[in-house]
Image 1 (cartoon, rainbow, N blue to C red):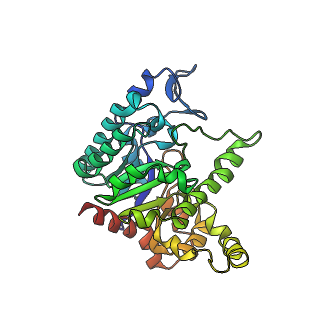
Image 2: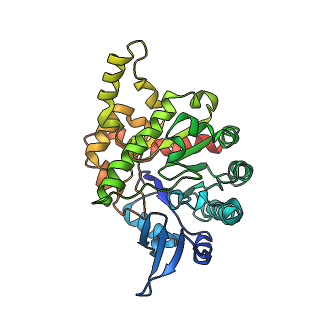
Image 3: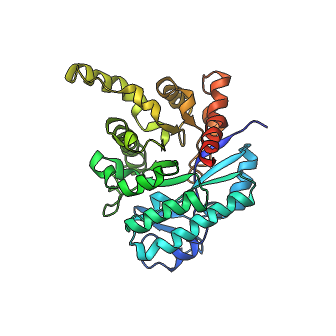
Length: 330
């Protein structure tokens, strides 16, 4: 069977449902007027179906789409990880333990990136070490707003140092930092202006921070995964390079450093994927779905129709992911 690895999906199970039901403020779960469950997130409300927390639903969907493996992450965009440590640390730790158990129960089909109680740095550092040394999860998820500038990224130095000790996959996913808040929705059409245009721009900022700073030199054993094909980068790279030529001729834009990062194609399609392969190379890109927020089959929706060589498609479909995971399991 061809290896198809979904490297960008989320999971709200592992005890989080019960914890969110007991919370009195956002984020929390509530029963709607029609009897269905609703997630009151920091920036709105959405229907909370079993797909979010019942692993059997996700496994059945994987089978229908021919996915051999899936990387589930702690739901970072929910903003649970930036709540006071005393409120969430125990639940996050239990979730991470559950995620590790799913890898065993599914024969390795389910992989996972753990969450951290980011408001308590000591607890967060200890949890990074537990995630890698005891649970053998391949990595962690961190909020994108922590990487909007080099200074903000360096505030995570203790976490990055702990992750670097064993090597670690670090997914940087849109979400606010401790003390921050989700962006205010646009006055009109927020589903497009805020959830697509603004979000993709913020993701590009993440990649800029990583390649324009010394972060990768300080912590060379970290593999950074930038979601959604690096945001707008594949489409504005020529402008970035032009700015470098005209304003900083002695320091051109370091395009080559973009190949130091990993990218997934979650929620995007074949044309975006082709542009990203031209810029980053097929050997730096993963398949990704953003399940259960998006339900498209990432292979048939994005990769199969892309104008790419069969060898490149095979790498994106699963070989890149499985090789990286194997290197972190050593």
